[in-house]
Amino acid sequence: MITLKKWMELVDYKITEGSDWHCGEPDMYSLTYWNGDHMGYSTNIVFNTKTQNVHLVEICDYLNNRAYRRMVDKFCDDNVAYDDVKFVGLESDDDFIQKTIAIMNGEDYDTRVTIPIELSDEELLRLMIMAQERDMSFNDFVGVAIMDYAKKILGETNETTE
Image 1: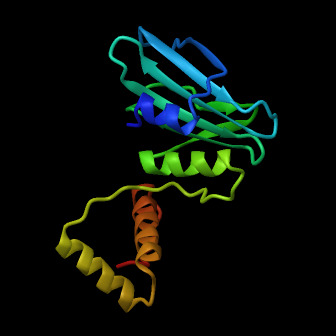
Image 2 (image 1 turned 60 degrees about the vertical axis):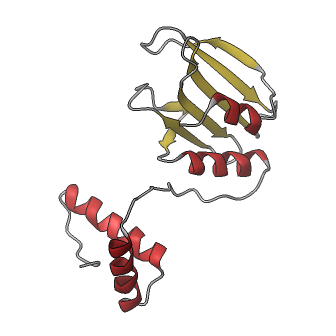
C-alpha cells in the first residue's frame, strides 16, 4: 500500500483539510488536498494515527467525472465518491500513482484498471507464444484472457483464448 510519505510527495506536501475518519475503525484520520478548482481534482488519504498504516487513498478527477480508490481489504463499504460518481477500485499502487500524476497535471490517462499478475518464466513464455500464434500483442492477449475468465466466472461463455 502507498505510504503516507509517498502520498505527501505526490501532493507536494500540500494539505487543504484534515479530519477524523469514521468508517468502523478507531484512530483513523484523513488528509485531503484539493486544488481549489471545481473542474480540477482532490485526493485523500486515510491512515491510522497510532500505527501510521495507510488504509486507503483516493483521487477524484472532477473534469472527467472519474474517481479512483486503492484500499486495504474491504476497509470501507461506501463506494460513492461524489454526486453520481462511484469509485473505481484500483489493484496496484503504481496504477494509483500514474493516474494521480496525470490527473494533477491535466494529462490524458489510461482509465483501465491495471491488474498485477505474477507468472513464472515458463508461464510467461507459454503466454507469449499463444499471443504470437494469435497475432496479438502480449498485453492484448492477457486482457482478452482475463475478460474471458471473468465471463466464465459470471456464467457467460466466450472461448476466444483457449
